[in-house]
Image: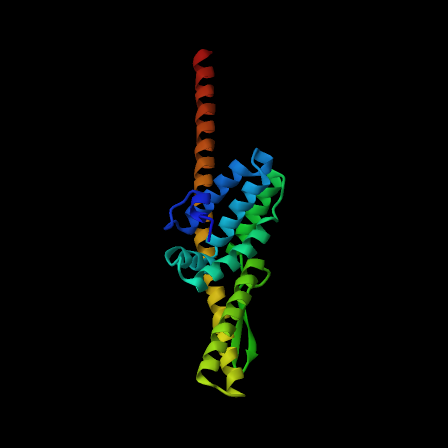
Length: 226
């Protein structure tokens, strides 16, 4: 583990999702290629955001930071970093397009229609509507559940057909965990959006009030003048 993602975004390790988001916007504005930065710098910023904004990969990263001698933790964070680095290459090169892309990315977390579908044996599996990030976490959670379930099946020597049911249960449990993490992240981002919207409305109202006050002052001045 060579990169300090917290230092790249300029935030402390205890930073919440709102602080991460603000830091990511600031760093992107400073180092985006269309704003005087470089592609390499932007890739690092995107990689740091991808790791730290995802509760699962952030947990892996924090664990590896605390336990540098833990081989399994280091391998896990290397795999996460490799996937994040590949994804970090994909971003709009023009700043106006990047802002639109970024807003759409955040809405992918805050505007999700969660649902459920039958997976067999009365077990229900979560769905995430049209949210790409939602499906990624649901599927990743399901795969994690399969991994955990497989280890338990092997260690306990559970035979067929019970092993299929156990595996299905763990897969569904992991998928629901992924959906829960995605929903939690979306709520945190949504709270910030509501605060920003409220502040914007407040500023617009203040601006409108100042214009009306100026208009009344001008009318009073004209009456006084004539």
